[in-house]
Length: 333
Ligand code: PLP
Image (cartoon, rainbow, N blue to C red; front, side, top):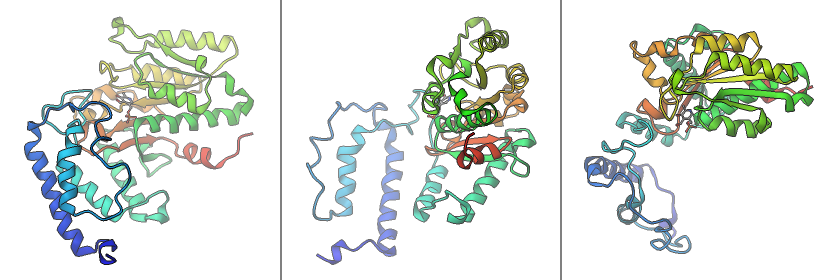
């Protein structure tokens, strides 16, 4: 009994690791046999599993049999070649093998000393990716800027919104929170509204400006300018503009150059959300969709969407990393 409760050793890892890889390779081989959308009813799993955790260890083969019989029917097969929902979001074998390494080493990279190689590799690879995307040099880590991996694009927009909020509050005083205004088109992903809620931006100060077919669902710079002027007249403080390159519902692209100039002339933080379509911009023929990104303070794309990388991996670059560090450490006035 005591032996059975011992953690697995390296030789057992070798044995079970090979079995697990075989299991996944067989899954990939037969994936087209599954209906892409799981056919189970809500709550199906509770009837198939015991009420409480087993007291005794189970054999590895039995666990795999359970996965085959009880778990796979409840999986929606994002890796299937027949999967066409939402947006491209498949991983790759290379991505999966890399995840094995990361899981095996159990890297915790929240600061340099917790794993120097992780921090340094992150900076180097995000510089590579920034160069592939032809981001302006200000976004590279050699200067004041740099890239940092976030879990999701939702976290990325929250991080920069908080940085921008604290930057403006340091200037105007923290009591001005209720006057801060955020702008984006109504095609913007719902993550911005959620970030505003978390950041304490008043819901009525989150301006989602209507974009219509007349602009191919892109945010109109004229409409933005008019709205900002009206807000300034009534004493509000515009501080954050979010543009999208490739909106979730229709891949609309906002005109970054003109929007960025408006943001700059009003002292606002300008974030570009290319979560979905940013990956395509590594191709020279699509890079023009990002023209104007030089006006941005921050830029984000999801490697886990269209870059054959496992969920979750969202790349965020900023021109001035100081604002991300300050919001973590500096007291507001
Ligand atoms: N922004 C855009 C344009 C998106 O398409 C999405 C997801 O579909 C997001 C943001 C949110 O991404 P995440 O799920 O990584 O938070």
